[in-house]
Picture 1 (cartoon, rainbow, N blue to C red):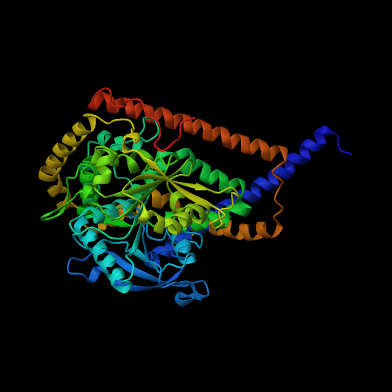
Picture 2: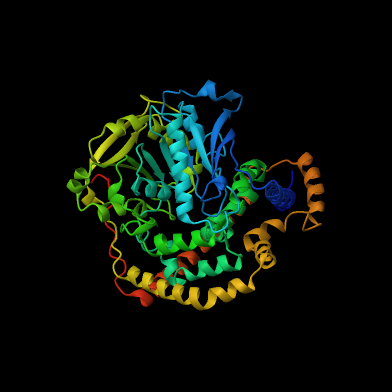
Length: 567
């Protein structure tokens, strides 16, 4: 038998072999991701739907063109429309967020919002968008296109009004449609959708103070000018990763490296969507940042859609289902629900308005998990769809939707799980107040934007051309950090591809219980903790600077979470 030193030498040699093999497979996965990204771009960045579809309407052909289109889902695997759809059920329109990435997150796998709606027998339509905006496309053009899509689906299914599913950015777009001069009839489900843009919790939701730290909307305007009238969605994706770099950057890659044998396909599947960067027009990004994220005009009833029509949230009459999560640092419940007490004075005011608002909260899932998580799709989204008839029959008021699932099985159906609607009070939604500081941010932003638009923007636009815009696109860090692993740009990756084929044939993964593997995982965890600590210091510093710039007493103590029963 080997002595202790001999055993350690053998263990070190075995770990070294495993480490080298995983390194090659890890690099090869990054190579394949880069090639997938390039192939996707060469194909024109089509929507990443796991379902067959047909085009119904193309917004580029409208009188006021936009880059949106309406699709009808026609097949699920080997099943066609007639095999899986009950024509008596209301149609579902899923609208994906246009916040940097391309369409498909609501249906890029079978266990998704599209998949659950089809599984429940609903006719399903999907709103996609193209990588490039129509020239001069405005936010009003987009909203008018969405209105026409809803009308088209309603005409195809006259018996029951459509159910609108709005994810993140698409959620506030659906809310605007509900609050405009025409309104909507069918229920709207808003998933992780910001509506109250100044709300949030100190140290947890730093994104809402970013506009103030950057001086307002002028920087987004500059980025769009440098893009020759287009704003690169890669900037939004980068902002998302910078929110929690320990998770979005370190843990993602460390997790892939540690379990490359089992995580490769899951990683590549998600990255196909994550790395499809789409553009917005200059007019759109300026209007969104200026009116919503900086101006908070939707909550205040000041959001002007077009001549003669301003969105008024009090005008909403169709039932709203709001799905938010306390683990979401992009759209926390503060931003998803905080508009309700701002619009309605109290519960009686909400009831007099004849409105029904139902909210559902998850305790821990992250922002993307609201749309991506298979478990969330199979339980929460199924429960929402199965409960819409009950929601429409509720008396006007505010309700919390609670799902009781004793089995813990996300694939069960009623009555294996039950849904309760607990009446709540508008007064209970009492998040931390945001006083005059954000009004100062709005004033600073307006002043900076007026100066930039008048004295700087014309010169930047005159100096910019398609060559410069395309150069900046290809040199964006979010693209360079991916493309560098493709053999198209880095010939040495051909060596990695050849080695990966050899390693895959001889691969013998080590057990997770191996001492050196445990030490490796512990090291990864410590690095993540260190990065988290640095990020928290960064966020605390940013909040301190924000307070110094825009006023003291910005954050009052956070109140209790709405809908949580007292112990």
